[in-house]
Every structure is written in structure tokens, then in C-alpha cells.
Amino acid sequence: MVVPIILGIGVSVAVLTAKSTLAAYRKYIHLTPSMIAYLNNIKIDSPSTSLKSENLHLDYLKRHYRASGFEEKMTEREALLVMGIEGDDINHLNKDILKNRYRKLMVMNHPDRNGSQYLTQKINQAKDILDKSYLFRK
Image 1 (spheres, rainbow, N blue to C red):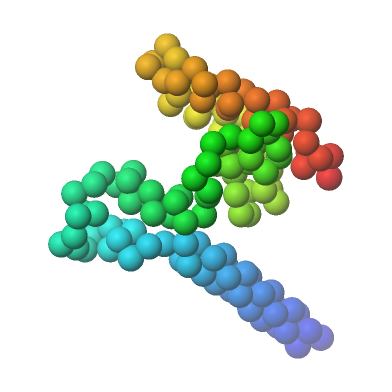
Image 2 (image 1 turned 90 degrees about the horizontal axis):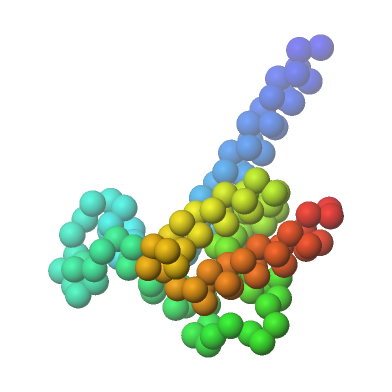
């Protein structure tokens, strides 16, 4: 009678370990060598070390997102990119996550704080599209 309980706990631990390992690996493969060095407090003698920590992600963004402007009509995919929602966040997307991302982006880009009015309009448009999206009708 105790054996099934022990086996169940063992299987649960193995599954949770595998799940967290895969999640960590998915995040790791997106890191550049300079990002890994920065996270480990290693100084690399290259031009990229003089950049601020925010600029370390520039290589990642250039590799994963196209260099063209916004599409004529915003799609859900583009709205997710504008709001910075990707990966596991999409699976767990709810109104609170969207609201928090929207507020964070609006604080950073608001025209009253020398932000771009165009980006503010795009952030508002992305929020409206995601509010009406099928992602919330799951």
C-alpha cells in the first residue's frame, strides 16, 4: 500500500524536475555569450562590454525580430511582440498580466515623460487587439 504512494511521489518529482530543466534550457539557448558573461560577473574585453546592461539584449532582439517597421494592420502576433509577451507567458496570459505589461510600457513611453507618441499609440492598439483576442476566450 505504501509502494504506490512512494512511486507516485517519485514520478511527480521526476516530472517536475524535467519540466523545470526544459524551461531553463529554453531560456538558456536565447542567451548570447556576452549575456552569460554579464550574468556571471565576467568582464569580456570587447566593444560590447562598454554598453549598458540593457544593450546586451540588442543582439537577441536583432536575431529574433525582423528589422522592418510595423505592419499596416496590427496582428495578434505583432501585438504580442509590442507588449513583450512571448514563450510561456502566452500560455498563462490573463487580463492581469496584460494590464501590468501595458502599465509598464506606458510609464516608460508616455509622451508626457519625453516618450514617443507613435509608440504610445502602438501600445494602445496592441492592448486593444489582445483584449479582443481569442487568447482570452480559451
